[in-house]
Image 1 (cartoon, rainbow, N blue to C red):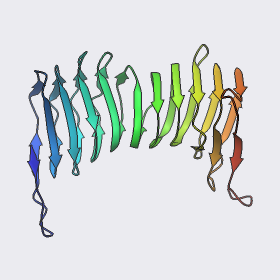
Image 2: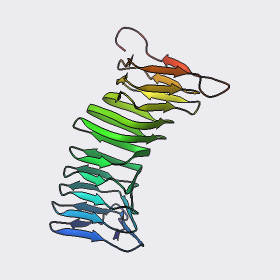
Image 3: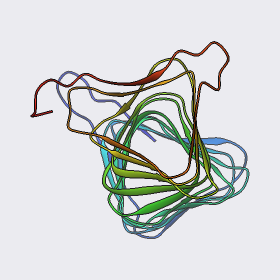
Length: 232
């Protein structure tokens, strides 16, 4: 599906799924440009690739599932997912869209390259691969396995590394802890990497486990804050 808006006239196709939508086969399927997707129906991706490239907003209150061997890409648009996303063996990539979860995130790896992923409930992820973008939300996110934070901003209420879990901070750049609490109950390997806070609000790092600094050879890294005064 694609819709081309032009000349200040926003031509929009709304795909309202109140039944069931099933993707099969090895091909790709796209919702592009000004196509708005919505509805309380189910979305079952059982084969191939699904690309969400729309610039329109989408409210999906039905359950979404991605089977093993499938790939779901959020490239652009604003999506509110209230019915949950289950992909214990599928691949989900966030590559530019803004996606808001209010329940039911059950994916093998949270793979964030750009855009924003927000959690509006206390969530748990078994793995984290973060290269850019923003992890946001007024709730807590717990990492229960292996995580890699190579860039981007964490603006959650709290990110917790659970006991027995490992979070690795790599890439010699700023890892913005934007008003969040980072609590380590497992292992954090930092290096080369910087933890930064850009002009507030205040952030907190709490280490109750093992924090390894300098695990990257010629090490450049640390913690720095760009706030000024008592209001930051």
